[in-house]
Length: 205
Image 1: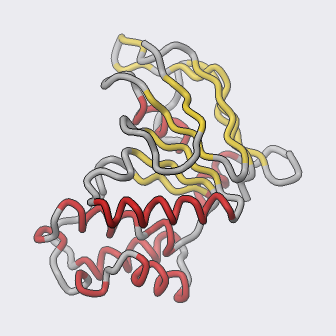
Image 2: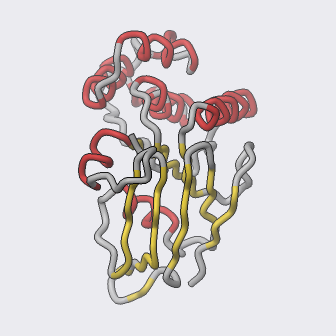
């Protein structure tokens, strides 16, 4: 299980343009870190590099267990982290229930965790509807429910509160707080302050 994330001198490019100055950070169990910076600086790309979708130009991304020993990056990414992107990654032609079941199966979520996710995010009234008819906030709730349906220690969140209303922002704040209390880790890219105590790491062009 991931107990710490280590990013050392990470550098990324988009085409011929370097996105940000080399950046190092640590996230430990029970800690939240918010990535900040101007539009286009590379906050989403940073998260995707941590998740293994982008190969950095330079620098390293590593994960460690509770004993401080290094974890295999492929195993850590496959089994111990969630990436909840700015785009929800939902198939519009599927029923919401089918989409939820697909992701829960893919991520290895158990029946009790699935039931808790449906109740927490009030998905019951949505499961029989096509994803394409859901509002932006409903789609985000469906996407974020993966965090409860298949618990994993490291949450990589890209603008997690957009486009949630005040009620669901409060719910997400409670979920994030509970996740940290269980020893989870959160690395989130956001423009507005997160509704929880966190450390801010700025990316600079």
